[in-house]
Image (cartoon, rainbow, N blue to C red):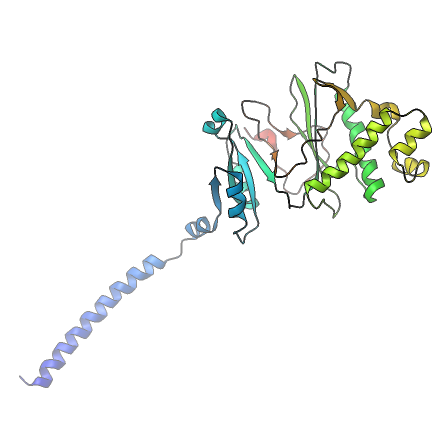
Length: 299
């Protein structure tokens, strides 16, 4: 056999074999690389837990997505009293959270440098305030806050701006108010706390007033009578009812201690550990969100 013909035949068989092998490899490669949408989405999702809040914030700073830190209490955590921390996006958290079964024990961690809406935590024990009408007290407080927002920031506010969440039970009146101002928010909750202390100090000064004229200048020290009429503030008698009885004596209906660094703020539909009262939309709520959820259908 000629050398040429020998090598030619071998080359032909090798080429045919090689082409068959390449077809097999190409087919396997195609099957491997065939796009699967769901796994890709899961890979892009951020959902990472940490035993310490510090570690969660450190990880959040490395993420290019708009992520947030949430605290939660699982069955194991409830026994020890410690919380764990979750880093994820608002979109992913909302998708999973709303499908969770009760009980939920989740809190949003309001970081010290995050812009946030004005919020209030109102509560008092019913047994210590048997003569108080809770709903009247609530409406007086809201009217006063709207008056102060108009006076201090010239920002309009009414019931339609306020998300009213209820966590009351037979022993305690409890509301969380989240105020959505038109194109306005606070730089952080520390600055917000300064505004809270300002108008709470006005109420304490009102309690110590000696005359009706002093009442007007106490609430509005810079403008007096003119601003008093402009804001339509509640009467002095109504405002004094915002002081309720507590275990430590007389105090304001709003908790002034919830405006601290990295505050944990309980979420809608969640309960405190070892408690059964969920945070739900109050019957008196008039705020409408484009992402509203009918909590009566959630268990």
